[in-house]
Length: 345
Image 1 (cartoon, rainbow, N blue to C red):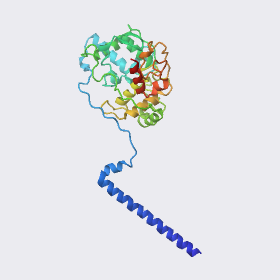
Image 2: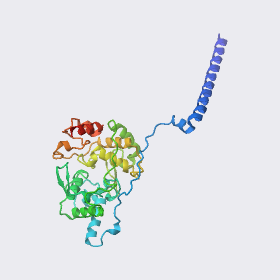
Image 3: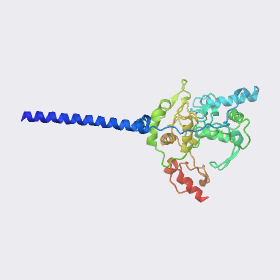
Image 4: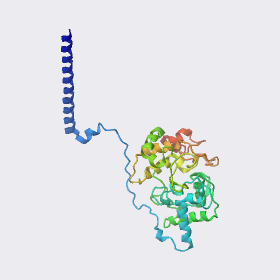
């Protein structure tokens, strides 16, 4: 009987060996045929894990560029412009919790949102401010000055308190912003102003997927808990906090998903530009959803959008005039909201 078992085991091993050999032969035949028909590179792609690739954005002709600093006057008006630039670039040194002038903000700098002191194309720059202000803004329901716009940023993005319009600091920042708009015709917005307008997703932005992308692409600079990285002097941020008590509040413009996704797409991670992005559109939407899903300071916005029909599609706080709920207004999909509003016009 033992002899029969040995014979059976030997036969089983032989069959298994032949089957393994047959599998190798079949795979080799399939590989050769597939390589001849579709090419080796495409065949290999079948076995790769899909990776989100950035959407190509063509370079923009006649892109706005900030005036050269050598054009700043050498008189007292130039000193004011230079001080304004310093305030935009290093706001925390002057207006932060340990500010040299006063302590009215959270320690972030204006250029954390308005990149390169408000000069980067599609980096939330100031190119169109002087040419378009004063103007009516639906959020306040009133005509606003540049001073009002600056204070909105201080109160919302810097979660702080407003400056006096006649303060030296306000005058300097306004002078710098106006200087940046040199040569831009009144009423016009040059190419490269504002932010990239990303196509809407056909589904809600996914904060869970955004967390995965954030941990892969953003955590080195902004921290696992969104805490950012403090500068060496500990009075400001080298890389700003994205949520928590030191970040922008829920009344800030970047709390709107379309604004934040466009900002991320053209500027993040560090080194990205509008025409050389490092993230896919979907990754940008999802990272924005993840960051804006997390706790941050709250602002009293009860006076915002007095005409609720003028609320942006991604303003996440009701009431709304279109019948969609806060969840969809925050994360999308946004196309149905757009189409519904078109029908009501």
